[in-house]
Length: 428
Image (cartoon, rainbow, N blue to C red):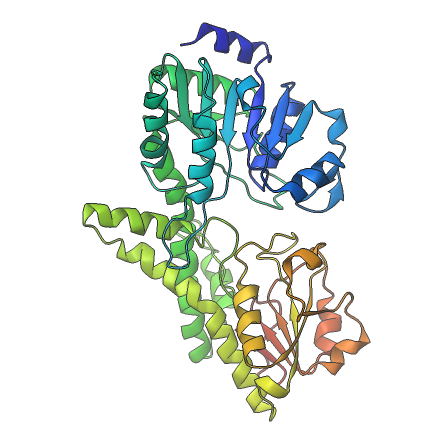
């Protein structure tokens, strides 16, 4: 182990660099700065860095006094050489063909590879398939003629962020830690213990990468199951939410999951495809995993079928209807719109020439994320009765559901906020 780096971490003299300042990277950076480390944040998106420099948290567009923390922000890699710890939190999305898109990760690796210095700890937090960290980073270390575990220290520690969760964050969520060698693991554990109450070590980097996928695929499979059963329950005239409430009274062997219009967020809609893609290298088909992802991906189309059915029942169709979509965020009480099922539903409705309106009290930056053809309803008021159909996509607690029920002409509820009456309120 590098005694120099160990002492720096213990004394909080190590300079921390977090690359990628999204929902994972920015909270990580703030936690290290609050813990007393000199920290820098890097994001190649200049508008994000500009906001942060103006003390605006771009994740919610609210003021945050970064000046009280020892943090500097950059939109380039110029300061990497001066840092002792590099934490990589860049996004790892999918291509249009549902295969891993590692372009952000590869770009970051190539940039830092040319600026590596001895006695540095490199920690990856970006989710990917097992083997990613070693396959893409080790060659650069060898190219620089450094020895892993002696000159450079390599770790993977999967993120466990849950945007909007007021009970758990980086500090009180057990941190999974792995290292390429014993020395790498020891340094990584020492680092994360400075900001996390609990840590859990695993035997190697691939295991840590696999753990992250397991956590999210577990949710994908169970949500896929309940989404499929929701459709069946609807056909059988059974209330799926009443069924779930009854089943969860069992004190063992059952954990409740709830249906919806599709999955959102960066991880759950994406991670199953990372594993199924990698599994093919081993001539193995992860059928269960892939099926759950396909079911969840199909849910926006089920919602659209219900919209069509409900409009037809009132003598309307897509092209002559005014539709209000309540909720752009992928889950309630936050403004995170990544991979939200809203986007697919909106795309198809506009393709069918519907007049689409939207409201989401938690989304503050509509100008940046919503196409010009979408019409924004800032507040829900008496004018809600002017819409042919109101679709609840995100069940924010801020909505007045009694008012919505009383004033709307027709409602499709994708979140189980209302009891269906098959005259005015329909489930989807």
